[in-house]
Image (cartoon, rainbow, N blue to C red; front, side, top):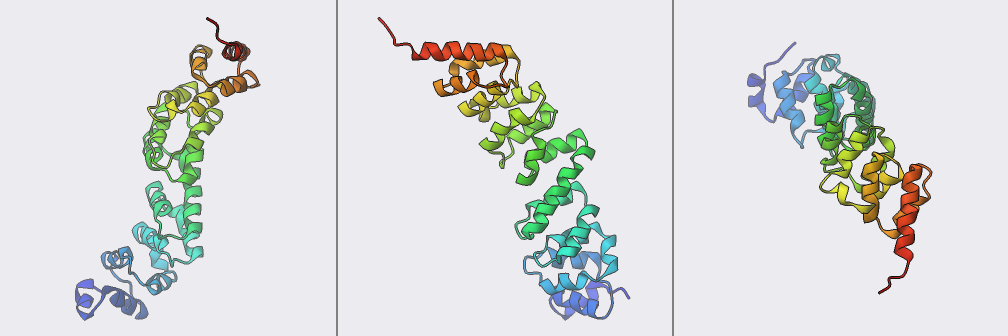
Amino acid sequence: MRYHAAVEQSSGDEAAVVLRILDAGGQPEEALLARVLRRPSCPGEVVERLAGCRWLTRSNLLLLLVVRHPRCPRHLALAALPRLGWHDLLEVARDVRTSPAVRRQSEAKLTERLVSLTAGERIALARVAPRGVIAALLGSRDPRCIEALLDNPRFTEADALRLPGSNGNPACVLVLLRHAVWGRRPGVATAIVQRGAVPVGIALGILPALPLADLRGVAASDAAPAVLRAAARTLAAARKRPQTG
């Protein structure tokens, strides 16, 4: 039996209306149910009742709203996540009301979906990706994706330091080096040189700007090309010599 919201709403609060319909074995209209689920004040009882309704799985919108509710049963949330699109998974991962366990699982599903996303979708995701997905995006070989990731407000200096070792495309590392914020961090420049992550000619140009301790680190790095290690040793030795005149 399907009820019409316009008739039932006259009897009181919409959440109570939904519960009466469910108690009667009916199916509330999607628009009414969506309004109730979107409200921060939506009672947990509504979600718990919906968890037993088989027809719930026919609507991705309702599934998304139920999963984002803090009282959503964990078994229902974990079963629903694979049915959601990547935009919906992103909403779940970023919703502070959603339980931490469900947010983490949503991030894991998003990470799994990366290989199936188009280049444009990965770039869009990189701009707003939650912390649990950023690590997977560090290895993207698309410079446009890395450029978007560097402007993500959740991206940190620790991520910038990991990127040269996680990304095998020198063009992506150059995007990091040229970034207005992260490219100016001495530690980031040092990590790039130590990893041999950019062409030698560019790395040689970076060396003179590094602090003495970082030059010594490059000189001792097994990952850096021999020519860089030699240049770093020469520069470090020159810094140690006393100034005359």
